Length: 160
Image 1 (cartoon, rainbow, N blue to C red):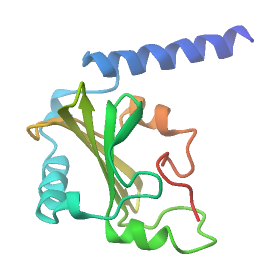
Image 2: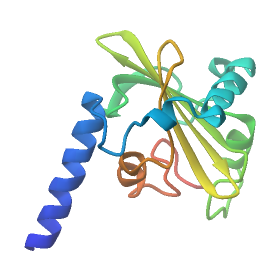
Image 3: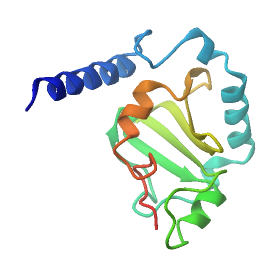
Image 4: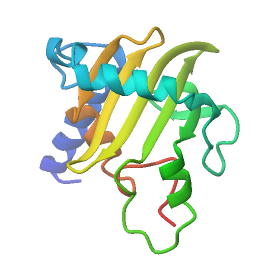
């Protein structure tokens, strides 16, 4: 492995670890993000839309073991825009208006809500405590870096 790529890998690992531990200054959280009215409104909107009744992506029909920093178990929900798009062949990216909500659990305790919303400018990320307090939002480096290897930044479903 080249020295530059090894350093980049370690930098990514440190940023992700910092986010997992809740450390500030790691591209995961900021005072501005905690009060982001866009993130506050996004959570209010998905809750008002009863996101826990939304469709679930194939393979995620029930809570299962997590493979990310969002928890050791997760539930994933797609809004109707995302669910309908998952049945349309030939898409190169998810349509604007797509929303994904992930509930994260650690040792069976509900610990976080993560929301992604596809906007004209790209994916908007937001993560909240279980009580709904904004932890981070926007396009945090840790979120974008971790999701960068996925198809259109989404791991839980492949583009049709």
